[in-house]
Length: 263
Image (cartoon, rainbow, N blue to C red; front, side):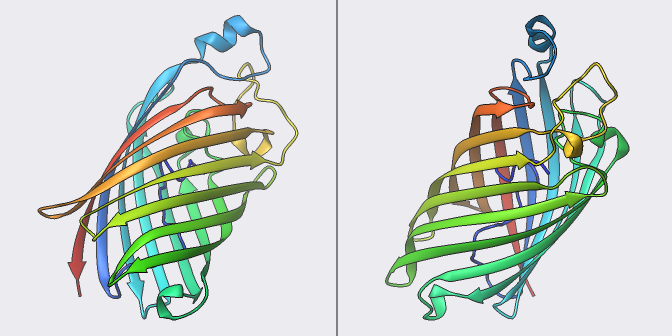
């Protein structure tokens, strides 16, 4: 359930990659924060700070111009637990409309499933709702082009999820991106998370995931991607300016290498 701009950075844009091209994406993410918005007193809250380090391997492939499949395996280490397995994630998307093929806009829908380890779920720094998470999402966008290159993209996505326990959650993400003749691209985004439970975050009690927590969070960020010898290299930074029942003022730094293989 991690922020899309951080871990589990699966594609939510209503655009698919090149047909029958496999993209392997090793990703490293560093997150740090200074305190946590919890029910307890401020002195206890100020001690709940830390640094987390995560690594993912994502594999993505588009099929027949309309379908896309993405798999992810993640590991991590936080202040609360040692290095180990964090999650396995799978996502499928279908492109209903494409402005690249003459439609007035692009529209995609997707379904995803994630399994997380027991240690990761019980770690409030890994942001999982439960061990088994299911989600549906929809994205709509518009692309502008010059010759054979896209120059600007504007898109927004909405998702709804449910774990095996607790209440559902809703997320949104919107982005504006610019491309320079496919040699480099950059973008800004805003993402929100809304847990529909009504319990506060209480770290004096056993923690079993965010599924029972009424959390709120907003993140803003940006990325820069450039072509390198073996593919593309992307750098991403995001900041969390507002939250409830969540780690406060989270900074996230991510580096991702995209290595393409054609079938």
